[in-house]
Length: 65
Image 1 (cartoon, rainbow, N blue to C red):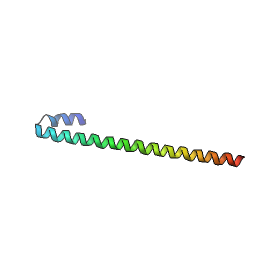
Image 2 (cartoon, rainbow, N blue to C red):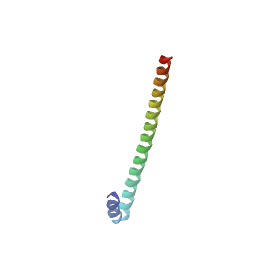
Image 3 (cartoon, one colour):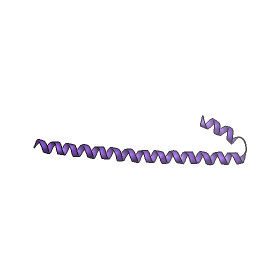
Image 4 (tube, rainbow, N blue to C red):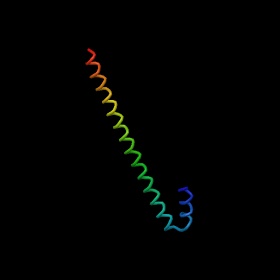
């Protein structure tokens, strides 16, 4: 749908084309930044969870000894 809207806007004139292209590029950069932040957050979350599980396993095995 976005592509169809952009194609309609791009067919108008050069000024609108540059404006739409800049908006499109800024949207893409925002999406890229959000994906990067989401991946970093997810990796951090998973690593902390794994460390927490490792600590619990070590404490549980020390109780069993």
